[in-house]
Length: 303
Image (tube, rainbow, N blue to C red):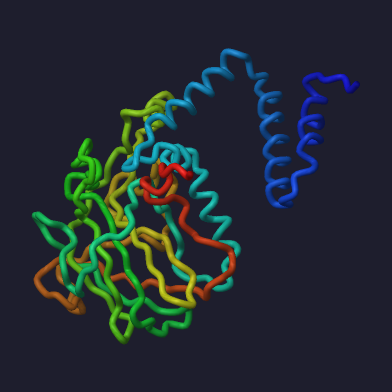
């Protein structure tokens, strides 16, 4: 019989998994066990701390609903989502626009809209966002899908504004399509930067770490077309005070934008405007770049 101690337990656990038929699952689980055991040994984890960790993860799961994904929020605040994004980008066949986080507030099937429509039901100060969706050589991609979602001018998503409603009405979201030249344009509002939800276990963790918990003003985009790699990204306001300290590490310099008060090239005059062109690389067989999902899809129970 093998003598099990704080060192040999790792090899013993991995040996029991050695018959795993799926090679990728086998690789992932072996590495997970090694790193997890090394972590416990490195910090000399106590039984009380181990139970505290289990209680924390249990609370994270209990906070998840069809309209809130606390585990994605945890992944975001630990930098894990950003790391997975960067690893995904390294596998790209062609380098297009930089990716950013899908985040915990994405919702599927946002309303189909026409060019120039406003995605906000009750806007105070409208702005225009316009540009082109191209391949990496600058050629416009016709009929590309441009999906957009964001907070309102007070820094709240529709899911937060309608907390407790069984089926919240979609607002500040829309799906557009580029024209024959790859051009798109739409109206929205300039969102306010916001603090991540602090009423759950992730918020408590952020406060315990003395972090401010803020995300800079940003607008999410999901851009795609047949034959091209789906782009998950966001545009960030240069003027936001937290542009250099995003609590979920989503900001990349190339995604920072400025709002022009008088843009002569805007397709809709009289509104402040943001001009941004999205570049899509060729499709690759490396799966989706969505580090996240509609919360309602993750909480579905399989039968």
